Amino acid sequence: DQQVKQNSPSLSVQEGRISILNCDYTNSMFDYFLWYKKYPAEGPTFLISISSIKDKNEDGRFTVFLNKSAKHLSLHIVPSQPGDSAVYFCAAKANTGTASKLTFGTGTRLQVTL
Amino acid sequence: DVKVTQSSRYLVKRTGEKVFLECVQDMDHENMFWYRQDPGLGLRLIYFSYDVKMKEKGDIPEGYSVSREKKERFSLILESASTNQTSMYLCASSFTAEAFFGQGTRLTVV
Image (cartoon, rainbow over all chains, first blue to last red; front, side, top):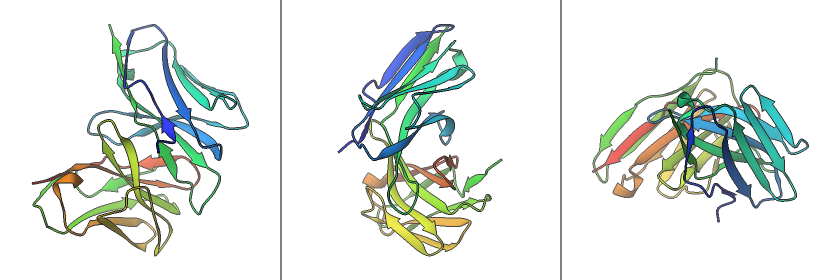
């Protein structure tokens, strides 16, 4: 059962425009959400996160929005740059258990075109 | 900067071999994880450890085991490699929610 879903496997956006990547989750025990960026043949790198007590977090060109009632979060990248082309993973942490393990979505491949 | 180092970038092993993937972190993190990444499936948790000698199964532990004898080192063991274990393996460590990943090991089982 996929608890974190990224329904768009790919997205193509022109340079300078806004990229919006979406993520849905089903587990109401998730209390912290993260976005990771991954280039081919490299490990994922942390991008931005948001706690469930907030609805927005901003860091430079990156903003994450959380809608708890809809169990939905999104990552906005403005303006998009060619270097943003990568696979983006949404991840969620549940407030249970012995370690802060993350559950990942299937990823969205973003292509920023010139 | 946090550094998570995986011992190999690329590995080719034969079916039935016992395979060891090693991971070392230098930030004294309590938690360490092994994930595999496959196209269309995202990152799936194999095993994790929250302390030395402590381990818990993740979502897909079948065919794998782990060892954590020292805090900084977490090993993934494929007891008898099979072709369906061909994948990208990613090690991570964390203190709180944010996990830091190694560069990955692309394992091919032939």
